[in-house]
Picture 1 (cartoon, rainbow, N blue to C red):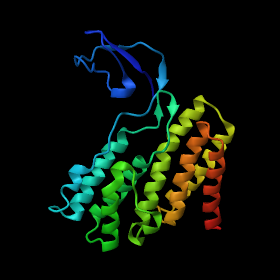
Picture 2 (cartoon, rainbow, N blue to C red):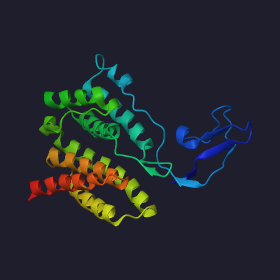
Picture 3 (tube, rainbow, N blue to C red):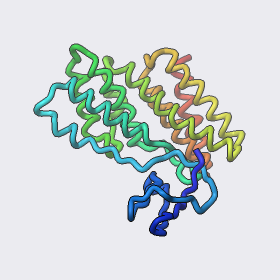
Picture 4 (cartoon, rainbow, N blue to C red):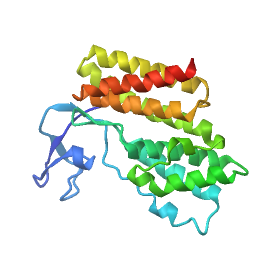
Length: 239
């Protein structure tokens, strides 16, 4: 959406940046009577921090299903606020967002399972331990029991990013980037059509391709080649 990023409180005169607070309420007096004083600019992100400490503190007292459910909800709240266009600038598909989406899907999956195996639980708790900082277990550690939610999570993360990429390219046309984005979209749809049941390595490659697409759009020419290589790896793997 397009917003006026610079705001002024009509009650006390304070000026602030909406991009930093995500609110029209004055940070000094709390008044909601404010006006934008600059031009409308595309902005989809909201200030948000992923803090899983409260969930981790329950590990010794709650069941895995309870912790998984609470984790999924906390990650859902975080990802719902996030976007990738900040004051008109396209941002990267950052590791913390990807980790949160993965944890949301895997947490939801485990919260519905009557019984989950040790490998799945170990993977979940390792992911829970570092997701706040964007740390995720290596893709070759994904257990077979989590193959489907992992694939769906990677597709969902890419879909969220590409929505903002499309919005950005509508305002800043770049034919080569749009073509590359279309290839990424096709692979994402394939994963969705297979309900996430793909090689985790391919799902992970797609995330890397989307991230490099963003880097290319924002000026890193070599990122285009990297993105193509990631997609070629997927295509070679599915022949």
